[in-house]
Amino acid sequence: MPGGGQVRVIKPWNLAAETLIYCAFGLGTLLVIFAVPEIFRAGMYFAYDVASNAKVNTLQWPGWALGFLSYALSAVIFTGIIRYVALGEGPFWIPRPRLTLNYLATAMLLMVVATIAYSTTPSWLFVKLYQYFVVEIDLYDERSIQLWGTVYSAIGFFISAVLVALTYPALGFTAIHTRINARQLLRWHKNNFWRILILAVLLMSVCFALRRAYWWTLDFFAPGLTSDLYYLEHENLRSMVVQIVNLPMDFLFDIVPAVAIGLLYRVLKANSVDE
Image (cartoon, rainbow, N blue to C red; front, side, top):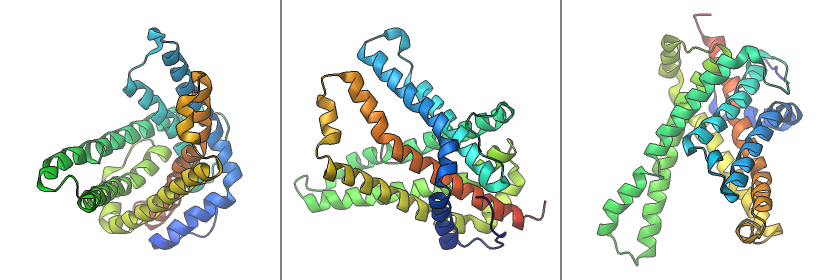
């Protein structure tokens, strides 16, 4: 359902709402673009788990290689959705060979941003900060520990939002043009960065809230599902269930930003004096 009039001013609240509405009403088409790459990704992780369970050392790929393949498959999804939203290019089940360079460029950008995020968010940096500041607080003071945890999470969220905001227009370039026009990209950020950042914060907040609601719902209707998986005797069955349970969240965190990028790119291009 690409369409709608060209919007000349970036209004973060309106664009965030349009993104969510687009995702809701275009669900079927987005599923078409998402399905095949996601089937490959879920199958890849399942095969990796099966090999690990069987202790087949020849199939033990390094984590970074598995991660790169995952980003490559996400890149296929992002590219397809961005082009569909921004250009009206019809959806397709099988990735198109002519877009190979677009897929690779998008995958590399996703991997670079993920690496930066991993190095500057709670998974690494804030652990070090916590270890530094923890000597200043009472380890038995739960309120202080919760306060620091909230502060670290908020800072990590903000850093992630900044990275996402910086990445949105660049992903539009890689998905549509392969190469990034650095001069135009800098101009877009100069004129619109805070609006794009607000958009990123809004969409990230919605996605995280939906993720929390999803796992809460699973725990409510199937108490102990996620924890009981680790006690299944059949390890391969456990791995399969894990992949199935995670599919909705994979879908959410792939399609929402991709749709937002497509809509944002249309606005930025409409306002560009270079085109």
